[in-house]
Length: 317
Image 1: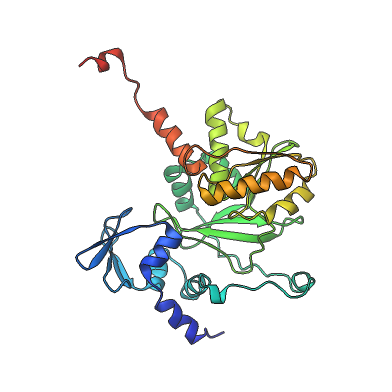
Image 2: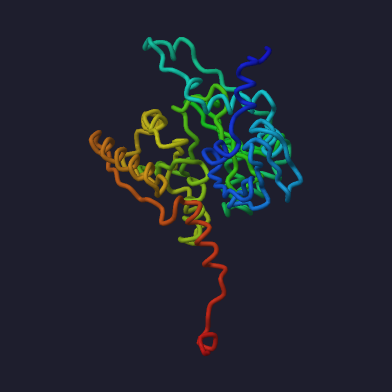
């Protein structure tokens, strides 16, 4: 099916700096008519805010579409849809009729699967510090996999085990670009099951934070199975859309621990959810990370653990 030419032109003219600031968390400093990325100094954007070149990678281009296809490895059509989807005028509207979603269920379009997930292991274990056994089990359960471009795909399933939601994370930058696959239904979130019936559920904004929290359980308790004692759910943001379905499917859960990001939106959403579900009869409380999120906490823990101990001799000047 041919793409809408107006949609393509709109995507081509999108401001590169605005896009990377909003969706990758990058910040830029103006310098002599061009812009330098503060997180990645070798990434430069010209004064037109469209032409870019990433010197350390030897990759450059014109516009957001080139960035997504050349740096993040997206297909052209997918890149256009991602850029267009960030524009308020193209945001999906709510159905006018209560049965619209039931009569017209979303059809999830999953990315292809790569045979050997080497990039996935490198990104999650080496760069993010997540325990390899956790990653292996989630691969076996078909909850994560690597696509042909080296991106990580996180999958949420319905009650029959059918994939109904998927989010993709780029792995070639420290703050990889993220997007939801076409047809994703956010009622079905990525989750990590417990090895035995558990009454406690930890709730996060992202799959990586859920996996980081699980890794911290292993490190803090010195028990390889500690992470499997409780369930974990990713909301894919700060909306609780995925929580009602999960609770309906896991009626033994009576305690909710909200572990959303330690920033304004995360704290506000966590507090609101705690009040909401406490009103529904659940034991609900908030456990924000010490840093911005639980992956940052995991990185800090690993850094502290590998830092050499200072002896009394070291302290003598």
